Length: 600
Image (tube, rainbow, N blue to C red; front, side, top):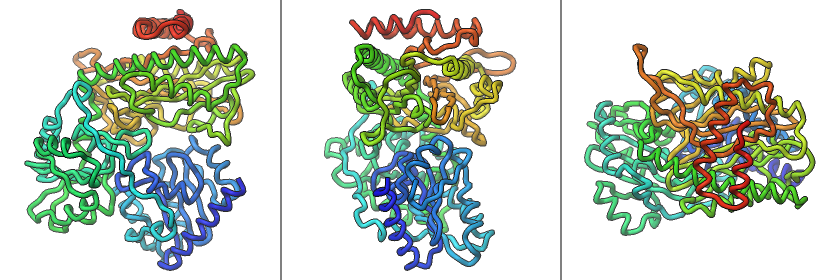
């Protein structure tokens, strides 16, 4: 810890030296890249490099005399440990969407001084809000500086992994059809051109995948679409000649990755450009000539890819069966080893579970870093065991495992909590209250078009009734062999917008939780698909089809807290899990499946 803290202090000095050279009082370091990605290539891990905080989300602010990291409750325990001795204060914010750092800067930076943020890695909407707040405080915002170009001499280069094609039957809709769909939306907006920077949008639109970002099968690129052709800005050498020809046949030409800004600057004055202010950076938006009319609206591809087709849903169900079979194999081996008294740790979970998934034919990688937290470590929602810091799994308690896979036919994300030894009455109570939240939302019917955040309270109600709560969202959208977190829907406390309307085909997680700091954590997560339920004079209604196939540990349940109808749902779910997975497993894995799906 001392070594790490001293490294952070040294790096802070390097950044402050660069600030002084440019007359900057403060620098804002978001967890972001030129594509506004959640998971970042190493080149844009500036916040982690400078602070030592390894969480996936957080905003760092450094002034000449202070430094503060803004993080929500998922990361508080982790951040306190990783920031210890660094000179960086933890500012606790209510949600990941909070803009508390903006108010902090406006308050802490004196009138007449300057704040810097790299315009190439801050979103247009975020930059507009920041500039407005700083203007009101008499503070100048500079977006033309990348201080890390000076302060980070060993900064990694851009990734160079090759791009590959996502093919039928796993990609049921052809590239040309997707381009036509986006062009129809452009026409509806009166746009002649559409610029896209978000990597999962580009991967979906062109039926391409890559490996430039950990866990997400995407590649670094921008795209510019007009009425007749599309230009993909991607680094030389990432797309081979054969794929280049197939892209050309669909009207997609290639250009160097570095020329995206130049292409925007060259748009004719007669153009009308469609951009998504939440999904394009300020730096790129500023390249657009002043004479070009700009329409700001959500990327059409963001809406389209959130609504999985029937063919895609069928592929996802198959991927869930593969994932479920892998988990049966892992859990059977793990519980047997535990019974034999073998030495097992949180690292064992990650190693064995990843290996079990890797034996499935369509797997292409994990969808995020496995979270395996025993007892107190399970109380950190985004905990990650490392060789330097992890727990052995021995004695009594709860083991939380959150994991997922990237399959050619879908992306999985599942959290389960398992009994280790004797589970206390308090643990069972917490577990059952969380389970009631999962069941309550899973069984909900709602009008089509309901804004996703409106559903959040349904999962929280059993916890709220006991004056309990959790600090993260209840559910996030999930991609189709793409990012494990995608929008536009979000079942959370966030302020809703019209793009968050729930539509058929959307896949979302349901994952309420409860975390006792220093004791244990509970989270029970399934992925669900929006499916038609019924129609009446009040309109169309949707329901959730539970996609995830993995037993829920009934040994942790306090039976008196469950109603008969809740037990009936759980028994029916376990019967379906057994029916779907039994043909895919044998031997010990089958025996484990049967034992863990017995009716409650």
